[in-house]
Image: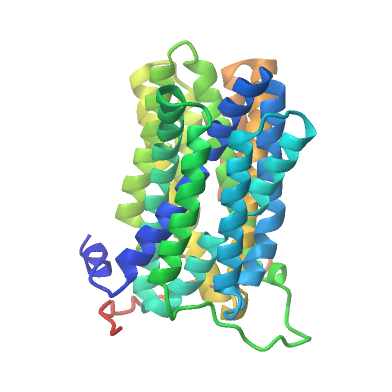
Length: 402
């Protein structure tokens, strides 16, 4: 764990990491906050669900585009500032709206499309801030800390909705987005994604095998998690507390797995192993109805999540050119959103047809697909950034000037 302590001694690393995580906190609140608020205003879960779907569609489509714009160093500040302002204003509009139907859906689409591309930007900056092993550790720390967004966000959304009003989580999210983005821009002053020459013959971002692998594996991995959530709720739906604790245990496993293994050189075998751990834990959940064993299975499934994701992000950061890194991470973000939608919808249909076991089978199939994807990719050619040197590299100091 000493390498993580060293990270916090590097100038600006703690401030930049904290700022971007704070600014992204609304991502863990928005879906639930919009669902509760729109249903409260319209009395229709169907309408609320469509608005949430519009949010996801808008974010998935726009993120690669806004990430590409933010990847031009001279446009980073303007892109993030405009996105934050539009995102905050559209959330306030949704919170205060008195109309229903298509206008609400349009606002949901705008909220999603204007999410600031902070994750792609900051992950493009990491290689500028630290040496190679430090970048690996910082990706692991970032991915692990990101789990807290999905733990804190839903709790905060429900607490504000219950104790204050259903509009308050959206108002709070608007304020956090604007303040957090401003904090990040101030913390990262002088650091911007590097813009290289726009060579006419340059390969497109999606032509990089590492980006395609990370998108496919990440999509399937996130799909597995969201499908498993459906299975957990279906299995323990009569006890909201039990379902909540069960899902939280998977996140706790992910946090511990990320801190323990995320900074290590995983390579092809390590990535496959981490993804296989998710598949084994997911399948084990469906093979028992003993609550204690199910909890253990969920914890195990989480252990592989953060290490696998951090390894995939690190792989992309090492393989793509610096001037397209933000766009590449924008595509990974969209892939994860698509995976979440596919996992939820597939598990929902499977649950209707076969009960909770159907959702668990769907989740297991997604996890197996994720585990097989690196092997398939490697069998068809070399994947840049995935193979590691056979001999271990000495770990350089993480202290840097400035």
